[in-house]
Image (cartoon, rainbow, N blue to C red):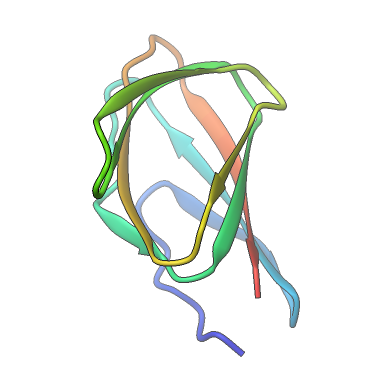
Length: 98
């Protein structure tokens, strides 16, 4: 079993069992996550609309517009930082597969 990560600012643990770890991330307008690495394969599902600048190691910085229900997949060991450049809070649920 993968040890639990330290929850980063803005993250709230929703559920954890032997198969998944589910957390909720809310970013206020202008707020960023710390640079962090996902130890597990992760599916992010947008709960709200938002405009996010994504800085993923080894890739070009990009701005992504999300609608509720949009999905983003991260392979394990993905290092990235997200910044909410929209005018409203942005919420996403992250589902990590163990």
